[in-house]
Image 1 (tube, rainbow, N blue to C red):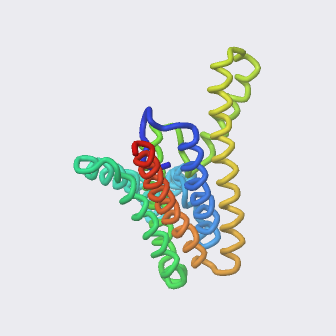
Image 2 (image 1 turned 135 degrees about the horizontal axis):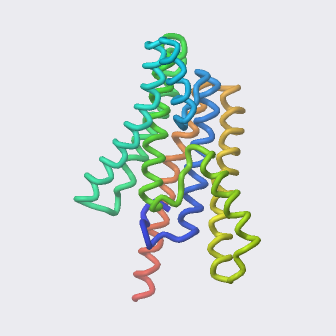
Length: 241
């Protein structure tokens, strides 16, 4: 799921990582919005609000919206910086640091959220946007830009294009590739919605403590990936005996 990159990745690898990370993104999106009434998984809307505040000469509020954009960018930058740095030493574990970093940020917001909502709600938005920047950069790098999980605008655009192409692409290979891509888009969209529903239900009960579930989901994904990798290595050794 995390370990394979580039040409070694299969549809199965992409479906698994898409399911996991889009669930987390949907969860964070809803929980973050309920907490601070801000979008915390993408920056498209924040750019519009930033320009609006600037034209109104509300420079401080405009600067806050700029910081939302900046922290998403900073998360993306940090994720790839970690990946590139670690790949120089051991490219088998380049994904671990960004995922753990994201998990820790979500855990931090979960544990400090009550005080932050009361005293500094923008910090919550900064942290969650940074975490989503980390995630989006990680999955984009690993999947060679095939999988993106933190926002749906591009996904619905691609899905609309690919569904229309089904009327015209008749060759077996073309249709198989197209159907695989559609399956991936639908998986991301569905798990984003599932994550949003679960996030909303749990937020209603536990407020930002609900983000502990999203944090644990990321760690569970790492554990699953490690166990499966070791199982595959063991099976290969047994075949050689």
